[in-house]
Length: 368
Image (cartoon, rainbow, N blue to C red; front, side):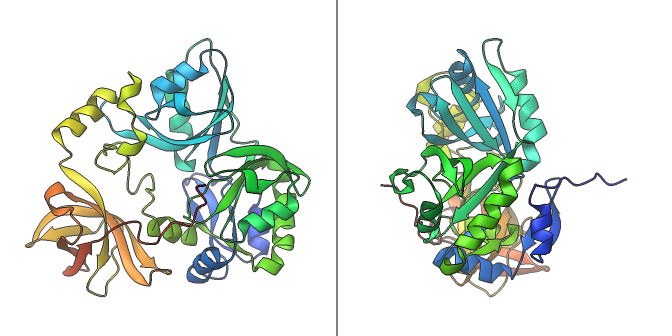
């Protein structure tokens, strides 16, 4: 018997809007409304609204919270002030990736982790198994909704509805406030490469906030955006997707995530294994490539060199903004330089591809 899919508080809103619903990570989610390409380009040119309430949120508080997170995550929690956000990883002792996440420092001794929807149960077991008595974990996923407002007009839209000056919220920073009268954590983060915000609210207020944003955003050309465009947007930025580009078999150094691994901070889970790969040099690397031949590379397709398999495609699609067929995949380090060529096996035939500089599309986030 198939497992019953979970639904976000906005499920009925999506159905009413005509969204095509699909299973994703145990959830029934909208993959598209008016069309993936149109939704993608609207986020790049105007503003889009995403329901990402399927993501998981864990809070940890207490005198031991900092020490627990410093031991569990790869980035340096000590560099994080209250009101700041940090991209980080949970790793296994062998260096494989448990999950990638964003870490919020809510106060000196209180933090929130946002984790991937398909990993909520696994991550919860992992962090609580490594907890300690002077740090209290709380899984707030069920009572938390998350809406993402992304695009060049996102700041203006959220600013008109917020009771705080959102222009003062820097990149990877957040502030408490109200948006359309709804209490929220207003976070200048996202998964699109565009400027915008992620709004954490009580699940019971999700529909009210969604409707207010859609109504106020009409003049901005707002559209609801599904998982299809969310995927192509993040692919153009070469943002890793857990389960595709990173998982328990991949080391952060191979995946190009060494920048969120702070070996100098001291001991943490996976440190020795990651340091070994860094010292010896990764045998494979996750690269961005574009198709030279007109073909679409898909997840799982074989990467070939002189007829022999050398790697695998982890993500691939048409990039609507760059107007090219692009992808990501692991190849031997010797084949990972910009300009290196190989073939992707598409329907039994090798199609030419080449490694290119990434991101494929320049980021528009406001980092000042």
